[in-house]
Image (cartoon, rainbow, N blue to C red; front, side, top):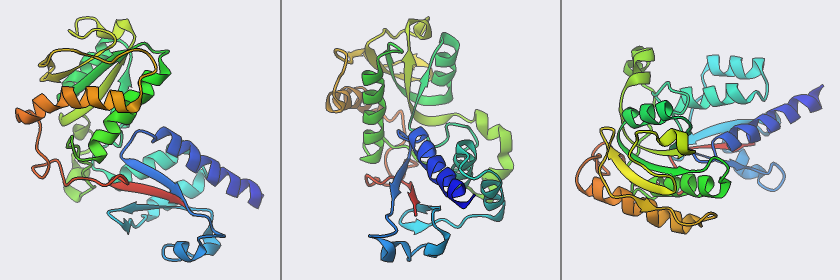
Length: 258
């Protein structure tokens, strides 16, 4: 019924936002009772619950094919994630909106190192949830503050024509977290440490991540100390030279539930 439909949309929104926790996308909710006047700037309140996408302070127009797929599977997390990736970026890869990624296994880690010109990499145990979250939160903060340039290219007609070829295009910079000892085989990185890689080869001395349950602030300092030398050496584009302008905490894209 109608109640189930609305509940599905709301649940799907929260599930997609959980998946995007450490990404370029920031989620927020608008209360239709207390903030109705604000909501009316963007939608007809009668259509709530719904979500809109805002980029650079302006709503992004939804396309008919997006609306059709979203309506066909109300609240489906994977459909919502596809919709956001297709609407916000020219990169067709599944992790296009992610600032950092986690990998397990030596081949996956090696492939990640090849996917970027510069990689800020760390290694922790798979079951060390605190360190995993701290690493990804610190990486996100470095990008949102503009200290590490990472740009989400918007869709364009030329990028759409590239199709699957764009999946294999090497990106400028990324944060990669290797999980477990097996992922580090032949990588020149030890568990519990972080280092910068350029062209798949380690370029900086290892910096210890510290004991388990590190704070985000402590992890931030570790990643900043690893990233700074390679950025200063010009291994990655400077802000304003392909890295985009400094970002506010809200990031480049944001979804809001209405």
